[in-house]
Image (cartoon, rainbow, N blue to C red; front, side, top):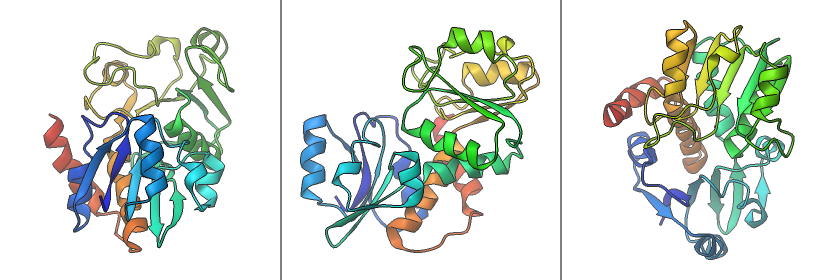
Length: 254
């Protein structure tokens, strides 16, 4: 494999058509068990790869260099092989920031509630801090590793203004699920769901019914892929390509 994506389950990934529209190479999807992942990283038989769940943190010990962004986040989703030297980056940060900016979502001075605490959440936390959120509250079912429980969140942070779902709750095929009832957050003015399949999650549907701005994760997926290609090929691609590719991929999901 020269270019592609590694992860544990990739059956519903849209990264292949996105990358192959962005660049002139074949982009392979490579599902790896934990044992296969170890061998894959040791062999270094690739030019450049993206990394998804659950390996965004696990790849770090195999890298010779990670940039400042990825180091601060503690997760890597883009790796370039430069003559056997593996260099790690995180384009989730830039992808999420693009989505926030494109929709004019105000983060500065706002309390941000982040559901989930995985690799994508770390990049999103970093963006919220960069944009000077007044407070970032991380929420998980068990409330460990710097996160609080949903019960505690509802009790103490009902004044959350921007809600970001990084958990898989509501993702295809379990589309009838939602991580929270937005009635717990009467001052919420924006909901960003990193899920992109379905295009409208149950959480987003409720947000729109309540008059709250709701954005899905497909733009973030396309944007982070664009930034990854720039690392892969050491090139620059204008952000103007993102909306067009977004519309093309959107047709595959509907």
